[in-house]
Length: 109
Image 1: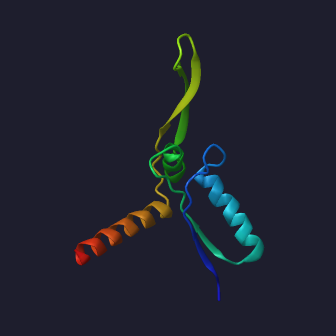
Image 2: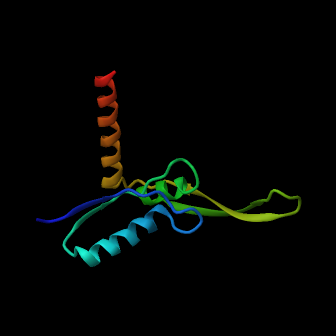
Image 3: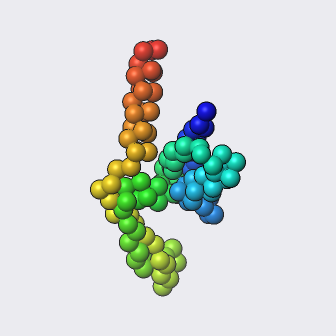
């Protein structure tokens, strides 16, 4: 029987983006189960990593700019995201999961 894995990690703070975590997990799984079907869905909880998760999920891009830092006369490089038009299967699946959860909550209460 073919194994199926759904990967839905958040980022690892200051080390790996959620997408990079998915890629590392997939690589490890494929070593043990080479024929496994893997669905990767990088997640974000609204904190750091959210912009990256949205950019990666939609095929968007990062725009880097120099901005004023917290201290006078300091500049830092920052970025913002432009979302792409590509909607990956993972986003459709997430939307369906949220919808199912909402229906379940309505039925119970």
